[in-house]
Amino acid sequence: MNPAPIFQKPGSALILLGHGSTVNPDSSAPTLYHAGEIKRRGCFGEVVCAFWKEEPGFRQILDMVESPDIYIVPNFISEGYFTQKIIPRELGLHGPVTTLPARPGRPARILKYCEPAGNHRRMTEFLLDRAREAAPGVDPGRAALVIVGHGTSLNENSGLAVNKQAARIRARHQYAEVLGMFIEQTPFVTGWQQHTTAPNVIVVPFFISDGMHSYQDIPVLLGIQAARGAAAGGAEIFRRDPYSIGGRRLYYSSAIGADRLFTDVILDQVLRFDTRRPRLSCAPDAASSLSPGCARR
Image (tube, rainbow, N blue to C red; front, side):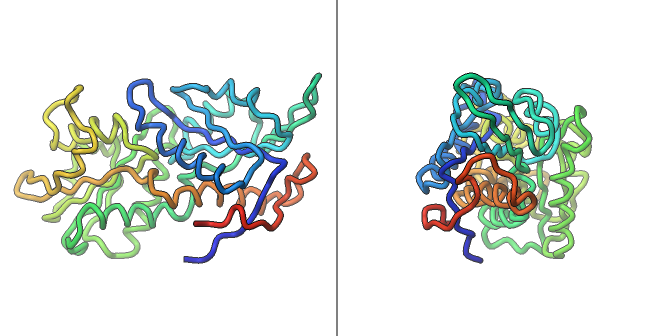
């Protein structure tokens, strides 16, 4: 692994945005973990989180940040409904760069909207790692790899991240079959038996966190959980591999976003923003400066 760039932005803030959940605390856990790790490394003067379904909400978070130079990283998988519609609307963003005018007691601020974590090139690596962990010893040449995303009819781009990763892995010719499937758009994950033929099927949820979808929805749609409800799912669902369905073995993985290396992905998205717009700053020390505080661990 190449060493990470080293930077420190004491005059800047990082806002990490997650989906969150009103019913499952596991949904926000990875985002909170990664924010805590970035704060521990001393990369920014401020590091805060905001969520769509938890407090603090998207609309509240800018009032909680003092820095004049603010990076915003969506901890989301796809470039779709939330990153293109919801987040810009809730935070008042107008493209990659938004300038907020000065007001009494607060200077002008620059909001730098970075790409979502799921756009990072290392997503392929995380998906393959999860597949190997879920099915140790299984010959990829005798296995189908199914990458499951949410999908939605609300934004045509929501399925692109899954399909892009499926195409990248397919091009490596490691697995007998590689498919992208979805909960709420075609091809639906309920049809996995019709769309695959290999004796082993490895299913990896392409989600930031484990929660309702990976604990309950997907297991029911796969047929490895009888019914959705309070007793369904939970982390135990990943420890019962392999499942025997229709004479084939199905292996089910946890989501990828809880990986500790995901912290580096978030920091890399900030660096990518700076690489594309190296002179953009309204804070005197917002530009990257060498420091050991933000080294990749």
